[in-house]
Length: 260
Ligand code: PEP
Image (tube, rainbow, N blue to C red; front, side, top):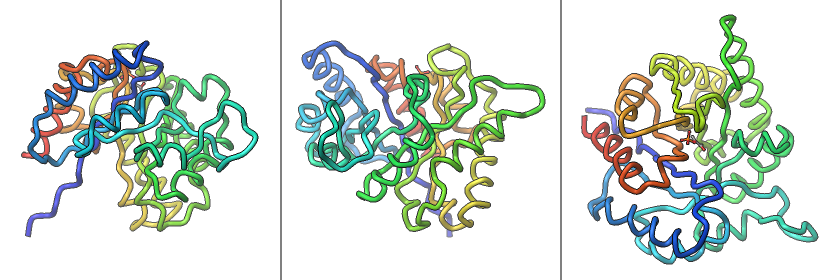
């Protein structure tokens, strides 16, 4: 019997864009219009800035596009001025939360905070997309140590039952927004490495539940080979997710891949 292929995930991280809710509605409509209505084996997630999540969720009642968030605070409520909790995000229709993005780490987010975020997200039965990735590559392979340390710090001691709520996004920092990408074979090597680290830490069954995405300058031109040779379970897309045609092109590559 053929094994059932895992659903692929294509996540658009809009970062601090676009500037108004009017622009956000238009972009969201433009993306939805290009997706068609037939069910496919690719789940599309858009992670807009916080203020846009609720209004955009209202535009996608059938869930053709699932809403995500770009970050969260690890406390469940109280005197934390300016912060947003998991339950707030859940109540406005968010299903996925990106954690530990390199741009947040660059602003000072620590491994300890990311770990608390992960516990809060999966504890509320929401999906955490945990970003890991090296700043640069060295010939000695030290970047594997970086990724291993980030994975261990973010997930240590997690209940193996929670792993159905965990996705890892491998995002080499040097590839984010730079137009550069690793060779697909290097992406595949890192995917295997991530699976090995998770297997060593938690055992084969929880590790096998975890999707590994790739992120960093994904376009409709490199998506097909990153899927075929990199064997990732989807993408975290930044810049290209702000252009509906480009984002839809990446999703089309993923859909095509699931039909092979
Ligand atoms: C990102 O922000 O997660 C990202 C991968 O950005 P880009 O696709 O623009 O490199």
